[in-house]
Image (tube, rainbow, N blue to C red; front, side, top):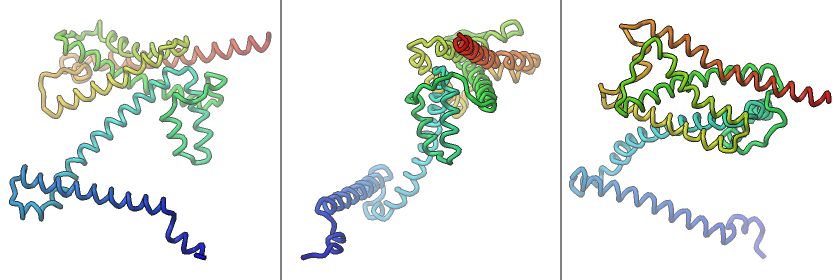
Length: 287
């Protein structure tokens, strides 16, 4: 009768079959890469067959790795921008978002479980709805207001550029003056702010409305990057006209002053909303 140790060393037939399949697949992948590199050397680089054979490794390490490195970096940048903007839209389209974030933070960061926190952050739309819409700690309230103020500034700048770019692409030359300088940031901030108001009102299509914002930000950054890389001198930027206008240096101060006030409007509205919820809950408790 065979011993248990010998049977464990040999493994089950299923395990042996999986090992054979894995080895065959690995060899197929390696062979495919080598054949492709060889044909690339012969056809594209026009190297002699013998020389092409000995330079397969150079093609794989120099051409492919260098080219893929740039692609990976750009792809990671796109992934980061999309993930950040998508998370922000999920936060502003959910009235319970800041209480949910507080609960997630204290459940995982105290135990050092960062991976679990990040996983739940990526699946934020699947989080269960908490009892209250406001955080339960003063520090969390201050962090929530600071985050909302910072993100309001970010989207005020991004959507000001996006609206200006759309107008410029349509052939409309927007003339900037001290009288209308506040109009563009106001319209820009109204886009994400309206999504937050929809969340307050429990509008059923809030997430559908907010989902267009990551795409708009991605297109704006992509067009700006292409214009910079191809050294286009025709492209016009709103912030460049405002902050770097040598003829009208007062535009900078007007824009910053208006931005400081406008970016605080979502924070003020959030504070009023939380206070109303607290007062309504207290009145219901007294009754």
